[in-house]
Amino acid sequence: MSTAAPLTVPRGPGAARRGRVQGALGLLRATGPVGIVSAIIIAVAILIAVFGTFIAPYDPNLPNLSLAWGSPSGGHLLGYDFQGRDVLSRLLVGARTALLGPLAVVAGSMAAGVLLAVTAAWRRGASDAVISSGLDILFAFPGILLAVLAAAVFGAGLTAAAIALAVAYMPYVARVLRGAALKERSQPYVAALEVQGASAVSICFRHLIPNMMPLIVAQATILFGYAMVDLAAISFLGLGVQPPEPNWGVMISENQVGLAQGYPLPALIACACIVVVVIAVNVLGERLFEQAQRAYR
Amino acid sequence: MNGPLLEVDGLTVLLDVEGARRAVLRDVSFTMRPGEAVGLVGESGSGKSMTARAIGRLLPRGAEVDGAIRFGGSDIGSLSGAALRRYRGQVAMIFQDPRAHINPVRRIGDFMTEALRTNLGVPADQARRRAADMLAQVGIEDGAQRLRQYPHQMSGGILQRIMIAAALLTEPRLLLADEPTTALDVTTQAEVMAILDGLRRDFGLAILFITHDLELAAAICDRTVVMYAGQIAEVRASSLLHEDPLHPYTAALAAARPDITQTAHRLRAIPGRPLSAFEAPSAECAFAPRCPHVRDICLQALPELAELDGGLSRCARAHELRGQLQEVPRA
Image (cartoon, rainbow over all chains, first blue to last red; front, side):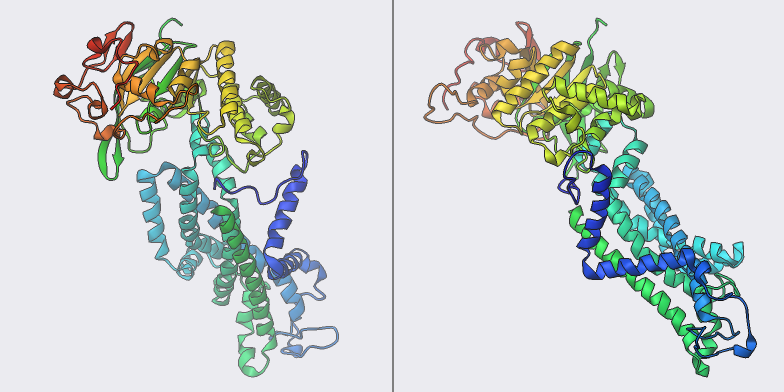
């Protein structure tokens, strides 16, 4: 990391905030046109998640069985689902839980993973051995299995599913970041800080973790995509968000019969939403990861 | 306080080197008074940096330490947690390569004021003012602006001054200077040395100055400790070291530096190669294979560090050789 200069250089004094914004924009620009398009898709998805309930044209939970599987028409751009509810409204409102779930998973697994990785790298020795072998054991549990377990313990719902996935993802995060933290830990400036009398906690939070940030952000975006797919799968299995609450995963689950009966649109459109957002997040994450690796050498 | 500030007493350090347990320091003992400047001189691998790292409690993991290091009378080997941080607040360290020892992605101001703000609870604006004042002390006038810059925007000389200023902000009583001028060009080197010497006088700071350059050490140090193969070869007042060395190694080291007043036909080198501490024999003089004055007595036992004319020498023939060491016979 000693050769890693800040990615952009502020032109003059007093450019702190502007420099940081430019730094973020510069990083985004470095991901190329594909990265920028991905970022725009993600931004639109987030806007829908926040304002979806306000822009939804109809009540997403109001059934009208006489219109079940109805085709798109003037006021209902994406038609009706198996209970005759407006698909577009359900998509817009369902975006919130579809995005919020992965966000919680990523936040939880990153926080725990970073903490474990830095603790292991800082203390080394026995602590490292205990943490690393504990993570190895966690690796053995598939996320879905943990989700079933969590649903049994906490009751089915988004919270249980998110906790289960956060636990399942944590080892992947911790494994990668432990390596980075070990490398950072051995930098001479860390020894210099130690001999200055800085405490371990202060060095870790003020220097070690901020210097690992590019890697942490890149990891988080990649995990977000995985979490979205896995949460949709858990909702599909009926262990996540509970119907009639709208959610993209739930929509696939409830409308799957339509696929065989010649009304594929409601299930497919929810699939498409998930696929587009996941691809956008993964592409952006991968591009950011490449940039971080380049800066990290 | 009248007692010594720092006492290193029989310091022996064992490290795992390539899987084997090896001594990198053997029975190193010396003391420093408050405000005293002591030079620690030796070739690469002689253990001088390892001594400083032991004093700063920065030895690599798994190091086995024997002997004691006392600071202000209390043993520092057993310190941990808050007590260790308090001790480290009294001991500052500066390094050969300032660029590697400053977090490259943080501003100079953050770097300099961090210890003040986090360890001593000084408010941020006051800490910045003190940092700028200290920069002026080390000859950086536009301190306020420097505080806003990043390490990569400065030259090595400026950065080393910043490191010195940062080290002194917490008002330490001992400065461990690990080859602070080796990576600098000669004029900058002279400036940095002058700054260190001035600060020692102004702040009553004790300095342990580590270098491979005997003359540089003599320039600012009261006493010089010469190390060879993890052992102390000689301790002597710096002013006497050059004219009247007590150990053949010191004499050879002094002679190896070319004289700028005349053209050398052939540069003098010490024959053989420097021994690492772990290669040094335990029952004979470690310098014997390269020493022009070697006799049987040198190979019979490890010479003791014996007192001689106010200095210490680990040479079995120090008495006999007195006065003959300035001119090394050509090999």
